[in-house]
Image (cartoon, rainbow, N blue to C red; front, top):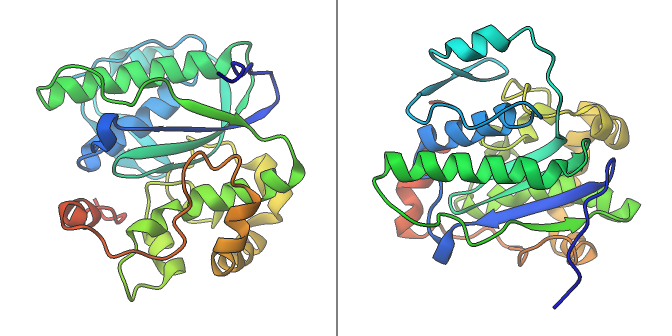
Length: 257
């Protein structure tokens, strides 16, 4: 058994988890919005589980609770983030996060609240019981400059496994709003969730980011080998034909909701 990973402040980690038995964990856009709301609301030392029956709506730059008086009362209270969310991508049966820890024990605390809150919501909404995710989240330390330069592109290109034959990869990613890729391209998406200053400086801003990810996709097989140790899953190189059971899911993944 390997050593248990110790999370250190100001260090960056790739986080991954998927559904138990590879089951769907995001069955519709309401589920995805609820998870994104959790990314924002639980990234606070003072936050706890929110009302699980609330519905969330999309607004420019983020996700808001349609009727949360407690949020209104706290809106002037300074937040104390547990982590910086540098990048994210939601897939039908798993998710990826790139986090930098800010508070002591920040990543474990954040992931515990996020996982518990979303599982309770999902089970209540879909009338099910038991575990939703496949055990504790997986995490790996991003320890080299090479890994740090490649992992954002890896996370943001992950949805290309849903890209149908004939679709232009770059266009598909720009239409896929369930990752932070659009925010790094300068397109309105979920800007309040991520803290992008660090990666924007590292990757050269919006124009250079778009140029770099286009090139990264072209060399995806070679680039994937460079970060095999931190990818946390097998890299899908070719754009696949979407399985029939995912067709209805994929058809709802565009930004029009």
